[in-house]
View (cartoon, rainbow over the protein chains, first blue to last red):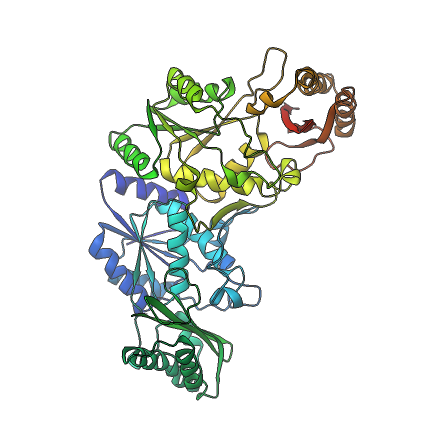
Length: 281
Length: 281
């Protein structure tokens, strides 16, 4: 496995691989890898000849009061995990390499970036779409892999790719969960033992609401209230949002019909966790 | 010469040409072709195996009170001119093909889009960078050709390509002028015979200021005043701006040193004309 820091070096590698007719799969990450990331690598290995993973904690997607500085990092461990997973190249640029002095260009998707996580994190998705556009231009992958855990991110990226006519297929992979159901996240490491225990309520409330819907409940308001009440049984949970939206357009839905995304964000102390399920009725 | 309206058809052609190892030159236009456009085609033919020209009056780069509806169009004449110039493919999509219902994604360059023409035309360059990004993704050209007449546009596109790591070389071609010096523009057709005559003052004032600089004038303010006074000898000329800026960063300069862009925009009736020169001291 090669570790590349310079954009020009990575472009040269990509050119060589493409000249040999190889297909390229791309897994963008912010590092501090867990099984969720590795499931993306697995998918990429199955469908492509060559897999590139980026590890880059992207400053432009963090707000001024967010956790950019203290976001967990462990490059040595990440490289070990990526190598044993079968990654061909790690791209780990510096912030200066990606955003040199005088950087001025941004890509933004309107509408679907202002709801859900976009409400509490203004500018977040503009940072995501900008860095992903740059990475796509650098790597020109045939396929790129994103986790369903960041459901809104996946929807925004798909919309951007369609709108801007980008030549890459976006593949969303299922959420990988801890044994007790908690969605895997690099941010789980922040949780105190007590919060870690309470956080199970997120996935539990989603699974239970899925059961209610399977049993015939179609009233979105009732499901939303059920989840909110359930989460509030944990005293240390502070709800940011619980929303039911159309899984593609992210528009609010009252009646559960078609593909509905049930998404939530909840804070435990200063740690903000997200989780979601898609139900199809 | 083939005329293509569907993005998917053009992508298929590009794929075929690239699989044969051919290099692709791209000339984006809004049609109503003149010799300026054809000089771009000429450059493209010299340096590439295959030349694609787009003809698309892009609505997102026109303000609500601008001339999108009445912008001159003559597709039949354009096709004749493009074919005899040696263009291989014309891409002439509908507005709906480029911006389907629910379109939401925009590319913007900050800073250098807010000066010069960006002041009077807020949002104009966001429309330009968005449509050019889409066209670059559809065509994936090796080289793209822009006229120096739109000096700010060329600087903005170059900045975008650098910032977003796009894989295309931007080539700027010299302004092509009428015999009396007026810079060629599709909008010249709007001018009344009287305004057409007066408009020569734009290029004249630029050429004269170049002479003054060659003779040793380094005071930007004096040159600016000279041009303004000269243009105001024409009663029907209404100055939008006359500016001296760094040719790359578009930052205002007081002293004429290095590569300086002298750019102006002047209205005759409702017709807004632009012109510029670059001086190097």
